[in-house]
Image (cartoon, rainbow, N blue to C red; front, side):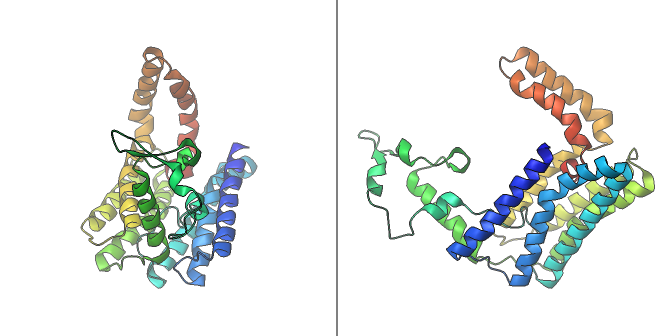
Length: 292
């Protein structure tokens, strides 16, 4: 039930963003065909976990792996079209940047709302500028800098989203991105050949990820979003500690022992670690969470 609600909420956000972009006339800097591919890719990423769990419940393990393979194949085809045909550059996640509603709700530059200057407080001794509680943004969109600095960051991010084109990729970078796109299919193929207990799929996938990142590491002139994407991919290498068979043979016992140790000896931390201990085995068995 929670997976269906999560997928439905993501789809509603994607649909709502599309409606708001249309009303605000904030079109993506891509052609209509490319925008449709990005939308379909976003939809697949929203529903992939729900479809995996639904297929497992209805058709068993065979149906689950069939659905996983079809989704990964569809995502790879869409991404290769974006890379080769549309020259979309690095494939970022999510494919379409969620609309920043707080930024869009603000008046445009040069047209401040009445009384906006009164919503800032300047300390008499420190001269520090802070927002009043009434004008504090929501927690998930809050940035911990001076108000003027935050406004500049918002505006810069919005300009980059709407106007900056992807960095053109050379032959080396195109090969690296193709490896990244093909990695899920190579992993699934190796699982079919050698089985889930074999080290070969784990090693093959890791080598492909590291090779792709190595080929992209020397690329200069990337946009901010592309640099963040490379950083995200680098951090996601830590997922290999949670992927079978490494997790089953090495990580599981040590991670659970550490979480239990924290829960027993650090006051209050058990409220986080104990539910995490219960959730981790379930998370690890869902393909699109651990390998997607």
